[in-house]
Image 1 (cartoon, rainbow, N blue to C red):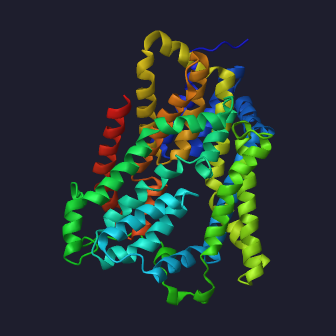
Image 2 (image 1 turned 180 degrees about the horizontal axis):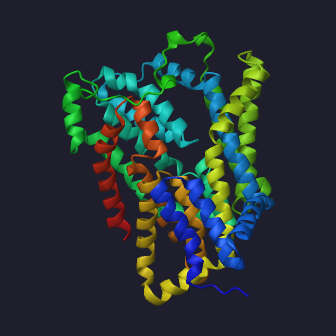
Image 3 (image 1 turned 180 degrees about the vertical axis):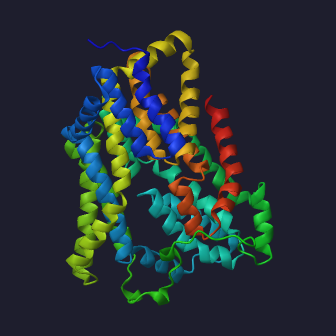
Length: 466
Protein backbone atom coordinates (compact mmCIF):
# COMPACT_ATOMS: atom_id res chain seq x y z
CA UNK A 1 0.00 0.00 0.00
CA UNK A 2 1.27 3.47 -0.89
CA UNK A 3 2.56 5.62 1.96
CA UNK A 4 3.21 9.36 1.52
CA UNK A 5 6.91 10.06 0.97
CA UNK A 6 9.20 12.56 -0.71
CA UNK A 7 8.03 11.41 -4.15
CA UNK A 8 4.54 12.77 -3.41
CA UNK A 9 5.80 16.34 -3.95
CA UNK A 10 7.13 15.55 -7.43
CA UNK A 11 3.86 15.97 -9.42
CA UNK A 12 2.88 19.46 -8.18
CA UNK A 13 6.52 20.60 -8.05
CA UNK A 14 7.11 19.35 -11.58
CA UNK A 15 3.95 21.08 -12.79
CA UNK A 16 5.05 24.36 -11.18
CA UNK A 17 8.56 24.23 -12.64
CA UNK A 18 7.35 23.32 -16.11
CA UNK A 19 4.68 26.03 -16.02
CA UNK A 20 7.32 28.62 -15.12
CA UNK A 21 9.81 27.43 -17.75
CA UNK A 22 7.41 26.76 -20.63
CA UNK A 23 4.53 29.12 -19.69
CA UNK A 24 2.27 26.31 -20.91
CA UNK A 25 0.09 25.70 -17.88
CA UNK A 26 -2.14 22.97 -19.37
CA UNK A 27 0.76 20.87 -20.66
CA UNK A 28 2.60 21.30 -17.36
CA UNK A 29 -0.42 20.21 -15.34
CA UNK A 30 -0.91 17.23 -17.66
CA UNK A 31 2.65 16.04 -17.05
CA UNK A 32 2.13 16.47 -13.30
CA UNK A 33 -1.03 14.33 -13.42
CA UNK A 34 0.68 11.65 -15.47
CA UNK A 35 3.69 11.56 -13.14
CA UNK A 36 1.41 11.39 -10.09
CA UNK A 37 -0.42 8.28 -11.26
CA UNK A 38 2.84 6.62 -12.24
CA UNK A 39 4.13 7.15 -8.69
CA UNK A 40 0.84 6.24 -7.02
CA UNK A 41 0.34 2.94 -8.82
CA UNK A 42 4.02 2.10 -9.42
CA UNK A 43 3.25 1.50 -13.08
CA UNK A 44 5.01 2.07 -16.36
CA UNK A 45 4.54 5.36 -18.23
CA UNK A 46 2.02 3.93 -20.72
CA UNK A 47 -0.29 2.60 -18.02
CA UNK A 48 0.20 5.80 -16.04
CA UNK A 49 -0.92 7.80 -19.07
CA UNK A 50 -4.16 5.83 -19.27
CA UNK A 51 -4.76 6.39 -15.55
CA UNK A 52 -4.03 10.09 -15.94
CA UNK A 53 -6.65 10.38 -18.68
CA UNK A 54 -9.17 8.65 -16.40
CA UNK A 55 -8.16 11.01 -13.60
CA UNK A 56 -9.04 14.03 -15.75
CA UNK A 57 -12.37 12.48 -16.79
CA UNK A 58 -13.20 11.67 -13.17
CA UNK A 59 -13.19 15.40 -12.33
CA UNK A 60 -16.60 15.58 -14.00
CA UNK A 61 -17.82 12.98 -11.48
CA UNK A 62 -17.72 15.65 -8.79
CA UNK A 63 -20.79 17.86 -9.17
CA UNK A 64 -19.12 20.90 -7.61
CA UNK A 65 -16.12 20.69 -9.95
CA UNK A 66 -18.37 20.21 -12.97
CA UNK A 67 -20.44 23.27 -12.02
CA UNK A 68 -17.31 25.44 -11.79
CA UNK A 69 -16.20 24.32 -15.24
CA UNK A 70 -19.61 24.97 -16.78
CA UNK A 71 -19.82 28.34 -15.05
CA UNK A 72 -16.47 29.37 -16.50
CA UNK A 73 -17.76 28.85 -20.04
CA UNK A 74 -21.10 30.56 -19.37
CA UNK A 75 -19.47 33.68 -17.91
CA UNK A 76 -17.43 33.96 -21.10
CA UNK A 77 -20.63 33.77 -23.12
CA UNK A 78 -22.32 36.36 -20.92
CA UNK A 79 -19.45 38.85 -21.29
CA UNK A 80 -19.33 38.42 -25.07
CA UNK A 81 -23.09 38.85 -25.39
CA UNK A 82 -23.07 42.06 -23.32
CA UNK A 83 -20.42 43.49 -25.63
CA UNK A 84 -22.13 42.24 -28.81
CA UNK A 85 -25.53 43.82 -28.09
CA UNK A 86 -23.97 47.17 -27.19
CA UNK A 87 -24.17 47.12 -23.41
CA UNK A 88 -20.64 48.45 -22.92
CA UNK A 89 -21.04 51.22 -25.52
CA UNK A 90 -24.41 52.18 -24.07
CA UNK A 91 -22.88 52.53 -20.63
CA UNK A 92 -20.19 54.81 -22.06
CA UNK A 93 -22.79 56.95 -23.80
CA UNK A 94 -24.75 57.28 -20.57
CA UNK A 95 -21.74 58.69 -18.73
CA UNK A 96 -20.79 61.02 -21.56
CA UNK A 97 -24.32 62.38 -21.85
CA UNK A 98 -24.36 63.38 -18.17
CA UNK A 99 -21.16 65.49 -18.38
CA UNK A 100 -20.04 64.13 -15.02
CA UNK A 101 -16.33 64.66 -15.74
CA UNK A 102 -14.97 68.16 -16.37
CA UNK A 103 -11.37 68.13 -15.00
CA UNK A 104 -8.34 65.81 -14.78
CA UNK A 105 -8.91 64.64 -11.20
CA UNK A 106 -12.49 63.62 -12.00
CA UNK A 107 -11.27 61.72 -15.06
CA UNK A 108 -8.92 59.67 -12.87
CA UNK A 109 -11.58 59.06 -10.25
CA UNK A 110 -13.97 57.94 -12.99
CA UNK A 111 -11.50 55.28 -14.11
CA UNK A 112 -10.97 54.20 -10.49
CA UNK A 113 -14.66 54.07 -9.55
CA UNK A 114 -15.62 52.25 -12.75
CA UNK A 115 -13.13 49.54 -11.85
CA UNK A 116 -14.62 49.29 -8.38
CA UNK A 117 -18.24 49.13 -9.54
CA UNK A 118 -17.86 46.77 -12.53
CA UNK A 119 -16.55 43.73 -10.66
CA UNK A 120 -18.19 40.98 -12.70
CA UNK A 121 -14.88 39.87 -14.29
CA UNK A 122 -11.44 41.44 -14.52
CA UNK A 123 -11.14 41.78 -18.30
CA UNK A 124 -14.55 43.35 -18.80
CA UNK A 125 -13.69 45.71 -15.92
CA UNK A 126 -10.56 46.77 -17.78
CA UNK A 127 -12.28 47.20 -21.13
CA UNK A 128 -15.18 49.20 -19.69
CA UNK A 129 -12.99 51.47 -17.54
CA UNK A 130 -10.46 51.99 -20.33
CA UNK A 131 -13.08 52.68 -22.99
CA UNK A 132 -14.82 55.25 -20.83
CA UNK A 133 -11.74 57.01 -19.51
CA UNK A 134 -9.17 57.01 -22.32
CA UNK A 135 -10.70 59.89 -24.34
CA UNK A 136 -10.95 61.94 -21.15
CA UNK A 137 -7.33 61.19 -20.19
CA UNK A 138 -6.19 62.33 -23.62
CA UNK A 139 -8.34 65.44 -23.43
CA UNK A 140 -6.84 66.49 -20.07
CA UNK A 141 -3.33 65.28 -20.99
CA UNK A 142 -3.03 62.60 -18.36
CA UNK A 143 -0.52 59.88 -19.21
CA UNK A 144 -2.08 56.78 -20.71
CA UNK A 145 0.32 54.79 -18.55
CA UNK A 146 -1.44 56.26 -15.51
CA UNK A 147 -4.77 55.08 -16.90
CA UNK A 148 -3.36 51.60 -17.44
CA UNK A 149 -2.08 51.54 -13.85
CA UNK A 150 -5.41 52.71 -12.39
CA UNK A 151 -7.57 50.22 -14.27
CA UNK A 152 -5.08 47.38 -13.71
CA UNK A 153 -5.15 48.15 -9.98
CA UNK A 154 -8.95 48.02 -9.83
CA UNK A 155 -9.60 44.88 -11.87
CA UNK A 156 -8.15 41.71 -10.33
CA UNK A 157 -7.68 43.33 -6.88
CA UNK A 158 -11.38 44.20 -6.55
CA UNK A 159 -12.58 40.99 -8.20
CA UNK A 160 -10.73 38.79 -5.70
CA UNK A 161 -12.25 40.64 -2.74
CA UNK A 162 -15.85 39.94 -3.81
CA UNK A 163 -17.32 36.42 -3.66
CA UNK A 164 -20.21 37.26 -6.01
CA UNK A 165 -18.33 36.99 -9.30
CA UNK A 166 -16.22 34.69 -11.46
CA UNK A 167 -13.13 34.95 -9.28
CA UNK A 168 -15.02 34.11 -6.12
CA UNK A 169 -16.66 31.14 -7.80
CA UNK A 170 -13.33 29.71 -8.92
CA UNK A 171 -11.76 30.07 -5.47
CA UNK A 172 -14.82 28.62 -3.73
CA UNK A 173 -14.85 25.71 -6.18
CA UNK A 174 -11.16 24.97 -5.56
CA UNK A 175 -11.74 25.10 -1.80
CA UNK A 176 -14.66 22.69 -2.09
CA UNK A 177 -12.62 20.27 -4.20
CA UNK A 178 -9.89 20.42 -1.55
CA UNK A 179 -12.38 19.05 1.02
CA UNK A 180 -12.62 22.34 2.92
CA UNK A 181 -15.72 22.55 5.06
CA UNK A 182 -17.93 25.57 4.32
CA UNK A 183 -15.73 27.05 1.55
CA UNK A 184 -17.92 30.17 1.24
CA UNK A 185 -17.32 31.12 4.87
CA UNK A 186 -13.58 30.44 4.51
CA UNK A 187 -13.39 32.70 1.46
CA UNK A 188 -15.28 35.49 3.22
CA UNK A 189 -13.14 35.10 6.37
CA UNK A 190 -9.98 35.42 4.24
CA UNK A 191 -11.00 38.79 2.75
CA UNK A 192 -9.67 40.98 5.64
CA UNK A 193 -6.32 39.13 5.47
CA UNK A 194 -6.07 39.37 1.67
CA UNK A 195 -3.90 42.42 2.08
CA UNK A 196 -2.18 42.96 -1.27
CA UNK A 197 -5.43 43.68 -3.16
CA UNK A 198 -6.53 45.95 -0.32
CA UNK A 199 -3.15 47.69 -0.29
CA UNK A 200 -3.05 48.30 -4.04
CA UNK A 201 -6.62 49.65 -4.05
CA UNK A 202 -5.79 52.07 -1.24
CA UNK A 203 -2.48 53.06 -2.79
CA UNK A 204 -4.11 53.73 -6.17
CA UNK A 205 -6.55 56.06 -4.41
CA UNK A 206 -3.62 57.84 -2.73
CA UNK A 207 -1.84 58.14 -6.09
CA UNK A 208 -4.91 59.80 -7.59
CA UNK A 209 -5.63 62.16 -4.68
CA UNK A 210 -1.97 63.19 -4.26
CA UNK A 211 -1.11 63.06 -7.97
CA UNK A 212 1.93 60.92 -7.19
CA UNK A 213 4.36 60.38 -10.07
CA UNK A 214 6.91 57.67 -9.23
CA UNK A 215 9.85 56.60 -11.36
CA UNK A 216 9.11 56.13 -15.09
CA UNK A 217 5.54 57.38 -14.58
CA UNK A 218 6.88 60.89 -13.95
CA UNK A 219 8.66 60.92 -17.32
CA UNK A 220 5.53 59.56 -19.01
CA UNK A 221 3.48 62.41 -17.56
CA UNK A 222 6.07 64.99 -18.64
CA UNK A 223 5.87 63.60 -22.17
CA UNK A 224 2.05 63.75 -22.12
CA UNK A 225 2.15 67.36 -20.90
CA UNK A 226 3.81 68.14 -24.23
CA UNK A 227 0.94 66.53 -26.15
CA UNK A 228 2.73 63.22 -26.86
CA UNK A 229 0.56 60.29 -25.81
CA UNK A 230 3.24 57.70 -26.66
CA UNK A 231 7.02 57.58 -26.73
CA UNK A 232 8.55 57.73 -30.23
CA UNK A 233 8.88 54.34 -31.95
CA UNK A 234 6.49 52.62 -29.52
CA UNK A 235 3.36 50.74 -30.47
CA UNK A 236 0.11 50.91 -28.50
CA UNK A 237 -1.57 47.65 -27.54
CA UNK A 238 -4.96 48.51 -29.01
CA UNK A 239 -8.02 46.30 -29.11
CA UNK A 240 -10.13 47.53 -32.07
CA UNK A 241 -13.33 47.15 -30.04
CA UNK A 242 -11.91 49.52 -27.43
CA UNK A 243 -11.08 52.28 -29.90
CA UNK A 244 -14.30 51.89 -31.87
CA UNK A 245 -16.17 55.16 -32.18
CA UNK A 246 -19.89 55.67 -32.02
CA UNK A 247 -19.93 56.73 -35.64
CA UNK A 248 -18.61 53.36 -36.73
CA UNK A 249 -21.59 51.55 -35.26
CA UNK A 250 -24.47 50.66 -37.54
CA UNK A 251 -27.13 51.44 -34.95
CA UNK A 252 -25.64 53.54 -32.15
CA UNK A 253 -29.10 54.53 -30.94
CA UNK A 254 -29.72 50.90 -30.02
CA UNK A 255 -26.72 50.68 -27.70
CA UNK A 256 -28.39 50.69 -24.32
CA UNK A 257 -26.67 50.83 -20.94
CA UNK A 258 -29.33 48.56 -19.48
CA UNK A 259 -27.95 45.67 -21.51
CA UNK A 260 -24.93 45.83 -19.24
CA UNK A 261 -26.39 47.12 -15.99
CA UNK A 262 -29.40 44.78 -15.74
CA UNK A 263 -27.56 41.43 -16.11
CA UNK A 264 -24.82 42.56 -13.72
CA UNK A 265 -27.44 43.60 -11.17
CA UNK A 266 -29.32 40.31 -11.63
CA UNK A 267 -26.12 38.33 -11.15
CA UNK A 268 -25.12 40.22 -8.01
CA UNK A 269 -28.58 39.98 -6.45
CA UNK A 270 -29.06 36.35 -7.44
CA UNK A 271 -25.90 35.16 -5.71
CA UNK A 272 -27.00 35.69 -2.07
CA UNK A 273 -30.53 34.53 -2.95
CA UNK A 274 -29.11 31.31 -4.41
CA UNK A 275 -26.90 30.81 -1.37
CA UNK A 276 -29.97 31.27 0.83
CA UNK A 277 -31.95 28.70 -1.18
CA UNK A 278 -29.18 26.09 -1.41
CA UNK A 279 -28.38 26.61 2.27
CA UNK A 280 -32.05 26.08 3.19
CA UNK A 281 -32.27 29.45 4.87
CA UNK A 282 -28.62 29.73 5.92
CA UNK A 283 -26.49 31.73 3.46
CA UNK A 284 -23.20 30.51 4.95
CA UNK A 285 -24.29 26.89 4.41
CA UNK A 286 -25.19 27.43 0.75
CA UNK A 287 -23.41 25.81 -2.17
CA UNK A 288 -21.03 28.31 -3.72
CA UNK A 289 -20.64 26.45 -7.01
CA UNK A 290 -24.39 25.92 -7.40
CA UNK A 291 -25.23 29.50 -6.44
CA UNK A 292 -22.80 31.17 -8.80
CA UNK A 293 -23.93 28.91 -11.65
CA UNK A 294 -27.55 29.84 -10.99
CA UNK A 295 -26.64 33.51 -10.73
CA UNK A 296 -24.80 33.70 -14.05
CA UNK A 297 -27.55 31.69 -15.79
CA UNK A 298 -30.17 34.11 -14.45
CA UNK A 299 -28.05 37.05 -15.63
CA UNK A 300 -27.74 35.52 -19.09
CA UNK A 301 -31.47 34.79 -19.21
CA UNK A 302 -32.36 38.35 -18.17
CA UNK A 303 -30.07 39.76 -20.85
CA UNK A 304 -31.57 37.57 -23.57
CA UNK A 305 -35.12 38.48 -22.55
CA UNK A 306 -34.23 42.18 -22.48
CA UNK A 307 -32.65 42.07 -25.93
CA UNK A 308 -35.47 40.07 -27.50
CA UNK A 309 -38.20 42.28 -26.03
CA UNK A 310 -36.44 45.45 -27.19
CA UNK A 311 -35.97 44.04 -30.69
CA UNK A 312 -32.22 44.68 -30.69
CA UNK A 313 -31.34 41.13 -31.64
CA UNK A 314 -32.61 37.70 -32.51
CA UNK A 315 -31.89 34.29 -31.06
CA UNK A 316 -29.29 33.42 -33.69
CA UNK A 317 -27.30 36.58 -32.86
CA UNK A 318 -27.50 35.89 -29.12
CA UNK A 319 -26.51 32.26 -29.48
CA UNK A 320 -23.65 33.14 -31.82
CA UNK A 321 -22.28 35.73 -29.37
CA UNK A 322 -22.67 33.29 -26.47
CA UNK A 323 -20.83 30.46 -28.22
CA UNK A 324 -18.02 32.79 -29.31
CA UNK A 325 -17.58 34.06 -25.75
CA UNK A 326 -17.72 30.57 -24.26
CA UNK A 327 -15.09 29.46 -26.74
CA UNK A 328 -12.89 32.36 -25.71
CA UNK A 329 -12.95 31.11 -22.11
CA UNK A 330 -12.21 27.50 -23.04
CA UNK A 331 -8.48 27.82 -22.16
CA UNK A 332 -9.41 28.98 -18.66
CA UNK A 333 -11.81 26.04 -18.23
CA UNK A 334 -9.10 23.66 -19.44
CA UNK A 335 -6.62 25.01 -16.91
CA UNK A 336 -9.15 24.52 -14.14
CA UNK A 337 -10.01 21.00 -15.32
CA UNK A 338 -6.40 19.82 -15.31
CA UNK A 339 -5.63 21.67 -12.08
CA UNK A 340 -8.54 19.95 -10.34
CA UNK A 341 -7.28 16.60 -11.62
CA UNK A 342 -3.77 17.37 -10.33
CA UNK A 343 -5.29 18.31 -6.97
CA UNK A 344 -7.09 14.97 -6.87
CA UNK A 345 -3.95 12.94 -7.54
CA UNK A 346 -1.99 15.07 -5.05
CA UNK A 347 -4.63 14.20 -2.48
CA UNK A 348 -4.27 10.50 -3.25
CA UNK A 349 -0.50 10.82 -2.91
CA UNK A 350 -0.85 12.63 0.41
CA UNK A 351 1.25 15.52 -0.85
CA UNK A 352 -0.20 18.01 1.60
CA UNK A 353 0.18 15.66 4.56
CA UNK A 354 3.81 14.97 3.68
CA UNK A 355 4.66 18.64 3.09
CA UNK A 356 2.92 19.56 6.34
CA UNK A 357 4.91 16.95 8.24
CA UNK A 358 8.20 18.13 6.77
CA UNK A 359 7.27 21.77 7.35
CA UNK A 360 6.32 21.07 10.94
CA UNK A 361 9.67 19.43 11.55
CA UNK A 362 11.92 21.86 9.65
CA UNK A 363 10.14 25.19 9.09
CA UNK A 364 8.75 27.40 11.86
CA UNK A 365 5.00 27.71 11.44
CA UNK A 366 5.35 31.51 11.44
CA UNK A 367 7.29 31.30 8.14
CA UNK A 368 4.72 29.18 6.29
CA UNK A 369 2.49 32.13 5.36
CA UNK A 370 5.33 34.32 4.00
CA UNK A 371 6.63 31.34 2.02
CA UNK A 372 3.20 30.68 0.53
CA UNK A 373 2.91 34.35 -0.45
CA UNK A 374 6.35 34.42 -2.08
CA UNK A 375 5.86 31.11 -3.91
CA UNK A 376 2.42 32.16 -5.19
CA UNK A 377 3.87 35.52 -6.30
CA UNK A 378 6.72 33.85 -8.15
CA UNK A 379 4.45 31.36 -9.93
CA UNK A 380 1.89 34.01 -10.92
CA UNK A 381 4.60 36.37 -12.18
CA UNK A 382 6.21 33.58 -14.19
CA UNK A 383 3.10 32.09 -15.80
CA UNK A 384 1.06 35.31 -15.92
CA UNK A 385 -2.10 33.82 -14.46
CA UNK A 386 -3.79 34.36 -11.10
CA UNK A 387 -6.30 31.60 -11.79
CA UNK A 388 -3.60 29.16 -12.85
CA UNK A 389 -1.73 29.91 -9.62
CA UNK A 390 -4.93 29.52 -7.57
CA UNK A 391 -5.47 26.12 -9.14
CA UNK A 392 -1.94 24.98 -8.32
CA UNK A 393 -1.50 26.50 -4.87
CA UNK A 394 -4.92 26.44 -3.17
CA UNK A 395 -5.25 22.63 -3.05
CA UNK A 396 -1.69 22.32 -1.76
CA UNK A 397 -2.19 25.03 0.87
CA UNK A 398 -5.46 23.50 2.05
CA UNK A 399 -3.88 20.07 2.44
CA UNK A 400 -1.26 21.66 4.68
CA UNK A 401 -4.03 23.39 6.63
CA UNK A 402 -5.91 20.14 7.17
CA UNK A 403 -2.77 18.33 8.33
CA UNK A 404 -1.63 21.10 10.70
CA UNK A 405 -5.18 22.06 11.78
CA UNK A 406 -4.43 25.73 11.16
CA UNK A 407 -6.93 28.51 10.27
CA UNK A 408 -7.60 28.01 6.54
CA UNK A 409 -8.45 31.67 5.89
CA UNK A 410 -4.89 32.79 6.67
CA UNK A 411 -3.33 30.30 4.27
CA UNK A 412 -5.92 31.09 1.61
CA UNK A 413 -5.25 34.83 1.99
CA UNK A 414 -1.49 34.28 1.59
CA UNK A 415 -2.05 32.38 -1.68
CA UNK A 416 -4.59 34.88 -3.04
CA UNK A 417 -2.44 37.91 -2.15
CA UNK A 418 0.67 36.41 -3.70
CA UNK A 419 -1.18 35.33 -6.84
CA UNK A 420 -2.69 38.77 -7.43
CA UNK A 421 0.64 40.52 -6.77
CA UNK A 422 2.53 38.28 -9.19
CA UNK A 423 -0.19 38.67 -11.80
CA UNK A 424 -0.26 42.45 -11.31
CA UNK A 425 3.49 42.76 -11.88
CA UNK A 426 3.84 40.18 -14.65
CA UNK A 427 4.38 41.35 -18.24
CA UNK A 428 2.73 38.18 -19.59
CA UNK A 429 -0.42 38.39 -17.46
CA UNK A 430 -3.65 38.62 -19.42
CA UNK A 431 -4.89 41.47 -17.21
CA UNK A 432 -1.64 43.38 -17.74
CA UNK A 433 -1.93 42.93 -21.49
CA UNK A 434 -5.62 43.91 -21.56
CA UNK A 435 -4.80 46.98 -19.42
CA UNK A 436 -2.32 48.11 -22.05
CA UNK A 437 -4.89 47.46 -24.77
CA UNK A 438 -7.71 49.30 -22.97
CA UNK A 439 -5.47 52.31 -22.26
CA UNK A 440 -4.02 52.25 -25.81
CA UNK A 441 -0.48 52.44 -24.49
CA UNK A 442 2.70 50.52 -25.21
CA UNK A 443 2.70 47.29 -23.22
CA UNK A 444 6.28 47.44 -21.98
CA UNK A 445 5.80 51.08 -20.96
CA UNK A 446 2.80 49.99 -18.88
CA UNK A 447 4.82 47.24 -17.20
CA UNK A 448 7.75 49.57 -16.46
CA UNK A 449 5.61 52.37 -15.05
CA UNK A 450 3.38 50.08 -12.98
CA UNK A 451 6.07 47.93 -11.35
CA UNK A 452 7.22 50.54 -8.76
CA UNK A 453 3.62 51.03 -7.63
CA UNK A 454 3.07 47.27 -7.35
CA UNK A 455 6.24 46.84 -5.30
CA UNK A 456 5.25 49.66 -2.95
CA UNK A 457 1.82 48.07 -2.45
CA UNK A 458 3.44 44.71 -1.72
CA UNK A 459 5.73 46.38 0.83
CA UNK A 460 2.70 48.04 2.44
CA UNK A 461 0.89 44.72 2.90
CA UNK A 462 4.11 43.06 4.08
CA UNK A 463 4.60 45.72 6.73
CA UNK A 464 1.03 45.36 8.00
CA UNK A 465 0.73 41.56 8.02
CA UNK A 466 4.12 40.01 8.54
